[in-house]
Length: 178
Image 1: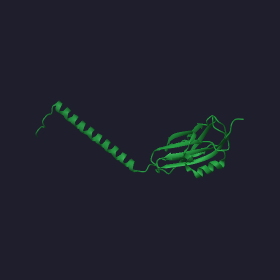
Image 2: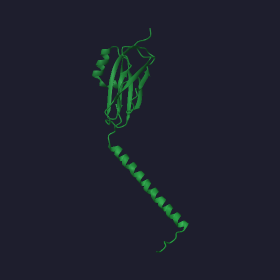
Image 3: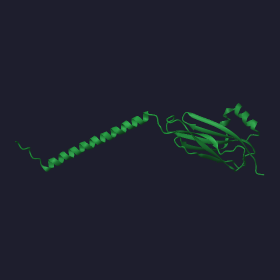
Image 4: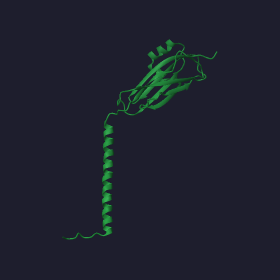
């Protein structure tokens, strides 16, 4: 029987270092490959996390008579969409106050004859950006200007996100303090 050649301590340490480096490279490659596969799969799959849109106007009472200087608060209600309908994104909620009108009929006829009335000019507005993955009930608010004239006003609310925008309106009265 022939004896195997003896290795020096230095050669043994060098071989162990080379083996350790090769194992580290192999583990690193596996980790990078796994991350690549997971990111590729997640970008092509439908999300199962819920997304939300919002409706207006919980808590807003159009029968209340407001006054110049009053704060108007608009509470938004989250409405869950089907999972995966929309990718993660930002929803812009806005509430805007029109200029004054002398009658409800004048607001309605103006809106019919000129649909751009819902685009302003506005005397007060508030905008809030929220995630469409958030199920919170956000609130927008604005102060009625102190110089607002008595009359009827249109509160225009808009929910906007990528490729989708919906608007609504509520008519209410502003009177001077007696």
